[in-house]
Image: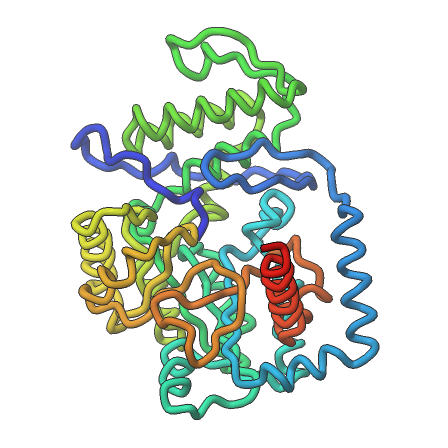
Length: 404
């Protein structure tokens, strides 16, 4: 889903692809911090800020009180036949959950999520199985579908260590451009280097020969602008090997070892043989476009789905008939175009549970990540948060009618 993977332009030249610089070992301490996840351009990480807003603290306190009084149990009964689709992206191999808490989740937090599903006797189903059972009106109580977007390498580690041992299926939506290139996602790498550096300034001429000036990295606005300029330059002016070289130089200038990032595969996608291994472990590999974009143009949509399907079709045995909208962006025009391409279901990032009337090409999900507390997770999975949203929506409609 993350917009960090969106490909702005194709390769600038037909130069032969070369791998990123060979990684070398070097020890290094990981530094904590958090970052806001922007929709279009990477946001400058905010160091050491782990505060919870008063509003969110009050919300959590309300959920604790609701659970204590048995309202979560009531909600589970009332929503027991609605499908809960959970959405994940990356799983932390090192400190990614502190770098991008809205995108990555720690393995310990994910383990607590799965333990809760087991405790509440939730039925974890594959997406295809859940939709077929919904069609036949044969859903078990508390059906849950685990979906994972993009195809980060860390997915393999989590499936092998946590999902497969518990026979829990999952659906993985793979965007194939970076899976094919096998280079780290450029935007994420640049943002990570800026987050991790202890340097106080960046000499731009040392990064790009015809640039000038010195960026004060303690000046948040200046650092943000520099980071966006670097990302824009790399995506619009360089081919993939060129972006690798630029990230290597940036890491050198800011004292962050890019080669360690490459070797650890923190921001790299799964290889073909790893996707096959996941499929053998019970993961359904599905469509997520090739370049992580879905234009509002039928021919371009067909191109994205076609390229994605062709690449994945040479790797896995899946029917490739389920789809995830990149970054959750979709329009009413998209579903009929997807249906014409043989897509049977499509998940959005619209929050909510899925009942018998939820359109199969506009399925709702709920995004879970490290920034979400356990009580918030339980409120969503129990259906309590969904019932509250419905009450608020009805109250708003009634208020509107009275006003008119």
